[in-house]
Picture: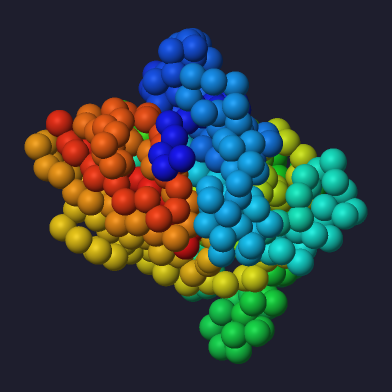
Length: 410
């Protein structure tokens, strides 16, 4: 066992892109048993062993998790197997987002264990879920709290926002201007709590007033990539009318990314995806605490209490890849469970992927070629996914310009 091709589960959450407009659908369709319905949404392709969407050995009914459990020391490496209880420590995904998905955060390990023990039907495991997203297309997200002076300016510029946080606003303004870091975090928490716990009827009234005041876009229309506050308010109100999450555009940083740009979301870090396609890697967990822009269960009090209330410019959310060769660069977030290597080859080019002492999952997102392991040449194309065992040296060969992302744990 050195490299195994996988077929991967795709799901149909309501926020996904329709049909083959979805990268998740395009990649899932490499499996001939998958038929894409242009009227259906395709939101996520899961690559890993999570029971909610386990990957299979291509062309078989055998789950990757079963292959690993037969000899975890071989499949994961002895060190990784010991550290993570014989389980693949990361989950790799492709997300295709047409409609915004939830103001959310993921708990740290201590909170995850508490939530799982108290409410196992809602929180299915006791693991944390730090995650990193790398854009495959133009991509829009909310991530982390804005600089406090920006939020203070929005309290003046948008009276509808102020009306929902009028009790906390004076102390917030004071702390933002002259408070200590601790006072600023407490004031930010109070402001966010008052917003997220506002009465539904008050939120709807202020959303309606805001949308009426900002009006429709100019006759030239607006781009789906417009990240101005009025454009985001209109967009989110069209998707989730009257939702409190609409006002989060005044509190959270707006990120507009291009293909290859990445950002990291640590535990207890608020974020939401707005539009685009990305690859996402995370610790193996499905724990999500939501509070807005979702039809799913909301745990507002838990979310408000769990956040760290870090704040700052959007640039501090971005994660820069570090070149390791002329064709490879690594995105290395500050956690142990995973890093991701981006490989970009021109047509006719070859490049070695050096062996590591842990497991890898390789996904091709562009181009064609082959994955060479010893004497085996395995085909590569968009959506092809391989599980690569530890201490396996590989060579990528590109017939056409090829881009691949490899999640790994060492």
